[in-house]
Amino acid sequence: MLLHQVALNNMSLNEDAASHSLHPRSPGQHFVMGRAFVDAQPAHLADVLSDSDYDPRRVEVLQSVARYRSFLALPILRQGKPIGVVGWGRRAVRPFTPIHITLLETFADQAVIALENARLFDEIESCNRDLGGALQRQTATAEVLQVINVSPADLAPVFDRMLEQATQPCEARFGFLRTYDGEHFHPVAVRGLCAAFAEFLSRSIDLADSIPGEALQMAGSLRSTDITPLHR
Image (cartoon, rainbow, N blue to C red; front, side):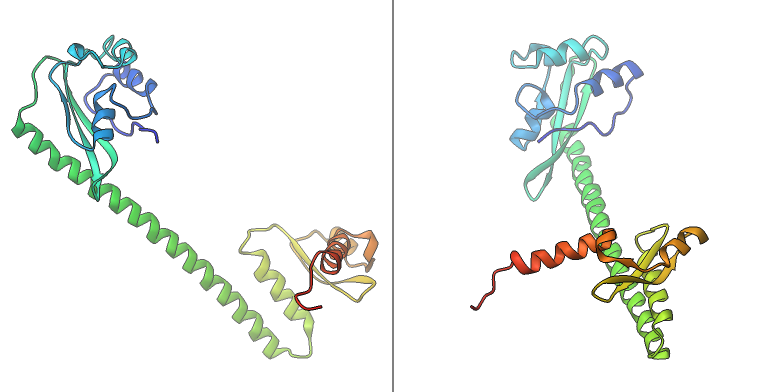
């Protein structure tokens, strides 16, 4: 698990760059925000430079530009488990009071609500996309069935509509549909092709001379050699 920096406030461009250079990073006891995350409770250092366990690299990178001294970090908890962390620093040695900590805990709670809302929104959007896809498939199927009902003896418009409905959802630029009589493929529908290519595809072709034929032969081979019957 890594901590990713997602927001900063009241820091210069140099401080911003220095802080970003340290992330993403694994949480741990060697820096205040990592400590708050690991322990799932507030972490408060009155003076980071007086802490012997404090990360020397963090001191080297940040203290050269930020020069913060007192620091408070609060975990963002969901159902008692940390999912993030928020921190505040002071450039002077001036510890945060219990009143300050209680006040800032409300902001950590608000962060939980914001993250949960974002998660729920993503889930709803995903469900909507799934439902939209299912509705699109149902609509396409219904339109093809309608054409079949209108032209039960004429397969040409049925194949045209099938190819149209199959091409649009995947945003394909063109498509073609052929039937197979056991030896030859016969063109029955073409969509989105130039006239010359459409004319070329309008010719019937032998099984062995086509990519669809290779796929059909492979499928037949799998059916005959790779599937073990359940009953002998």
